[in-house]
Picture 1 (cartoon, rainbow, N blue to C red):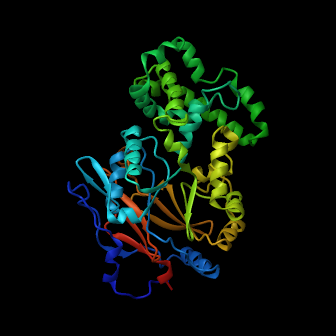
Picture 2: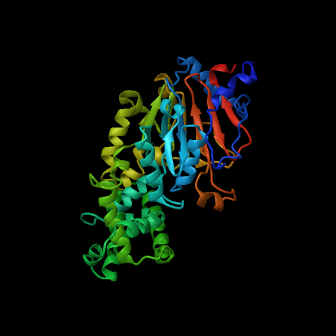
Length: 434
């Protein structure tokens, strides 16, 4: 399979003008070349042939810009939007470009954790929304963990939930530090009991493993229960060190976590708009956007109820999520890596999707050091769009500087993978491949 021959200069218009007054994007590729491997991998060829047999491709009626996994790095997020040509940055202000006013922006999940500042990223997203940008926010597994960790500390303690703060909360401790510094008042601390009592509220009780094993039988398989208990024991052993690392006492952590409820989840909270606006899937034409992936159950719901039904169910069930939800098909949308332990995507689900006109999944969740990647997963075409934006991940993984990249999908059927970590803009055009 290869591209139908065409004028190689005809694709220049697929890279919108970039406004980069401070030369933040000096190493951004500006040359378009065919997507490596897209025309030679038999699995991708099979996916494209299948799409043709099921009605062919339908493309969005305006450009879509997909940016995923900013992980609390506002600068990486804004550079990605600049790289895609949708914003102009002047004197710390952002404005939509002419192209940005035409485009739809999809944030593919995982706004929380890892990077320099969670709240700075949310402020950047708010500033983008204030420009009038057509922006759609999707849930990622890190965003779900924030919700579940905070919810676990409110209401009565139960065997199924009392361990969830430690289970989900390790990675959100830096975010709690930020919330404490900006929002927690002396009165909030005065309202809490002593340090040991607060620590007992954060941690599961000493008999939790026995109570959890009994309570979880109705929701989880025995193997999963055993693994969950072992994982929690491991996390408990690290909890004090992690608290010390962020420089917080147990009273301060509890105060910040309780304040998160007001800040993120109560109507009118400073950042309540973020979770209120959050969906778990979005689509346009033949392309489905989701943080991680699919399973047969969600394929069925997509076919019978459409993306709106999936989003409505996710929103309703995430409000009071326990581990049955976390390991179930709805949370699988933000967690799966198609492991044996994940909810299964089989030939039945893939066929149902194609018959309903969904031919490609655009996702985040799996970061790549060479920009975006095209591959077949379980016989379904996936485009992995996590290009490692945040500085914490980049430093850990040996990448220099601040990340920038975006996936651009045009009404013409052209798909562009843009990343500062790959020497050219990757071009994929399914309708022009034979």
